[in-house]
Image (cartoon, rainbow, N blue to C red; front, side, top):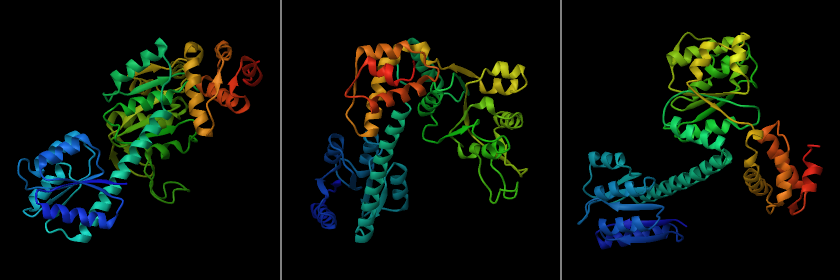
Length: 388
């Protein structure tokens, strides 16, 4: 049910607008305010899906109200209405955050269409927030150990900058969680974060994947295609498993980082890109450099900031809180009640070595949740963890 506020100093117009809106959809809940001060008070103390506001009003005009309302609720959908408007006023309203501007007397169809579009926009904003929360939960970094606290501190320092970050750590430690946290806390968070798994792309295709290609550049290039650098423009590019990238592709990435320009495969045209690059690897890049598998100059370009993600064996104190987190997450995914893990079960989990790190640990917790009764015991862990 949509909640709509009408702010209008003329009683007759206020009532007409209210009647029109409720005739359109009887489920709409309409509130009225006779001046800007009363309207702003209602906006401050309530949550409205949409506001219709006159511009010329005593005590506080609509432009002032619009400015103050946007400070209180930046995502508020506000439609301005005026019988004294002109193009300059309309442009000023839109610049200040209004969803739309309608002249009096309003055309009935346009008014109702604008209200529908405004409510659709409100729903999209809400859905976007829900999706962002789900994404944030998916990439949560769980734990209280000093090792993890240091990483959180590093993220807070690094995220607001545009510095490149190289994240190291064994397979399954969750290096991508650090990359997502940096992006979400950065000024680029409203732009996309594009991920590329360099180990999963054949060496002959990695250049096309990163830099794009022109139609006919190679046999299967049936149309022009943008690469990940272009797609991530104004945002963040995450090069996962960067240690597996071919030397030829490394040379082109180095050039892109140095000059902020890329060239599609099959083209000579340079394209400017504004991208922050984060990279991760499970390899010892210093060793790879000595063996001639990785460029030293690229290593120094990528590794302005170095963050090492510890293995689960290095932070076993986090196993109880990780168990609680995965228990809630997995049970929610399967639509079942949360299980209870006995203290002995938790101690047994802590006694094991986790070569697969967080990835392996989550799989074991999911197995225990599916195969065990309401309370997971030490015996259950020994039977189903696959560790003995």
